[in-house]
Amino acid sequence: MVNYILMIPILVSFFVTLFMIPSWIKRARKANLLGKDINKFKKTELPEAGGVTVVTGFVLGSLLYIALNTFIFNTSENFIELFALLSTILLITFIAFVDDILGWKIGLRKRTRLILVALAAIPLIVINAGESEVGIPLLGTIDLGLIYPLIIIPIGIIGATTTFNFLAGFNGLEAGQGILLMFAVGIVAFFIGSPWLTIIALCMAAALLAFLLYNFYPAKVYPGDSLTYAVGGLIAIIAILGNFEKIAVFFFIPYIIETGLKLRGKLVKQSFGKPKKDGSLDLAYKKIYSLNHIAILLMKKLGWKATEKRVVYFIWGFQILIIILGFIIFKNGIF
Image (cartoon, rainbow, N blue to C red; front, side, top):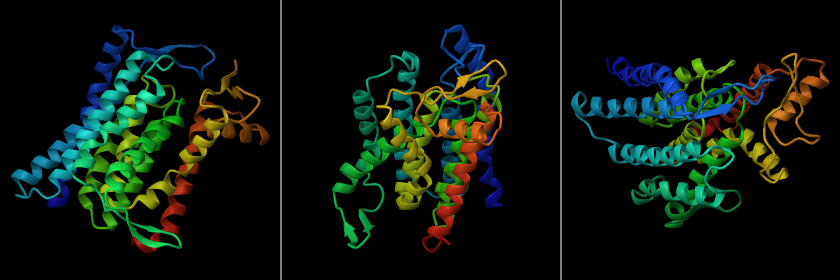
């Protein structure tokens, strides 16, 4: 009975997001909150910041989970952590939404974004989230004390939000990546004895799935920073609260690689391809500045038509491989 009831928050996250998206598309168009579909030869403008529908669905599903625990199961276990989690996500989403409104070419200054995201981690800091004892190779277990909440947590939140935003720009890519990673951290949380974090992860996965129905090729709405910041931040928060930061960092290998490639381009080179009349994509630059570019290059080398869909499938496949390897490498600490 308990298992079936706890499916309700997940379903609510899915359907709230699903029903909100059409309305958001109409209102965003009226507000001229639009962005060009860069990877299409014929540039069309699509509604931006659709991530607010995802966060809304996620938050309502999470609050319903809290309500079920309060009124049906008569427990308030982990409520402090849950409200800190939701507070941080809402703060991150607000920062990202402001960035979306200003537009990706203007947006907030990089330094401003980093400072604001660090401040968004305050709810986690004040509850002293996670465990300050960490295992370091060759040194063993070290208690970081106040360094963990005051420095490590903000850095973790900043790192996850910003890097998850780097690997983007293709229809369905960010939402699909979010679904894969939410399922992965949800599985880890379940097996280490934190099923409440599994429910939270699945609420976000469900909201992302609803969004993907409108965001996959050919997209009808863009996610914006409102989605990427919230998803990246939530992955970090779940890893912190569940005390499985190591495997979460391993799952983020595609984003670590993407960050390195972006730094190669001094953070100004974009992840997009160069669209051609036949619907295929070519490299936008002579050098590689993104995993998306690597996908396009490999397909060209293999004699395949590099399309937007295939690039997304390539990245998803790579992410699935990393997740599988993560479970194999860290299996002794999970199962």
